[in-house]
Amino acid sequence: PPIQITDPQTIRSISVSENGKVYIERKVGNNYSLEEVGQIFLYKFINPAGLKSIGNNLFVESPASGPAIEGTPGNDGFGKIIQGKLERANVNIVEEMVNLIVAQRAYEMNSKGVQASDEMLREAATLKR
Image (tube, rainbow, N blue to C red; front, side, top):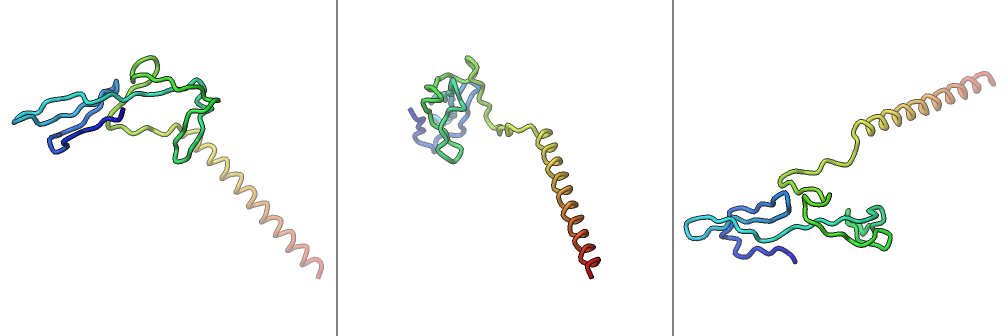
């Protein structure tokens, strides 16, 4: 079920633990108390490559992916939730830089080939006269 927070005016902060528990710090009288309001679950699939893309970086279960396996963060290989961190892209930056340099060199070689061809055509045109 979705986590619902009622009476947001009394809430000072919201936090999420590594194991997916969601807490709010709520004002009660003159004090604040920490209150657990929900749990975030993670899901994995037997064949993640079989998930069906529905656009905007969203995927849904398909017969090829198998059913969703629910788990709590930090247990059974489900990973942890780290509040306040951004995921680093699943890209090997060194490999991508090498690919960029290779592509740039290939472009330069093609460009020089076109220049040489143009020069030969110019020479041929002047010899014909």
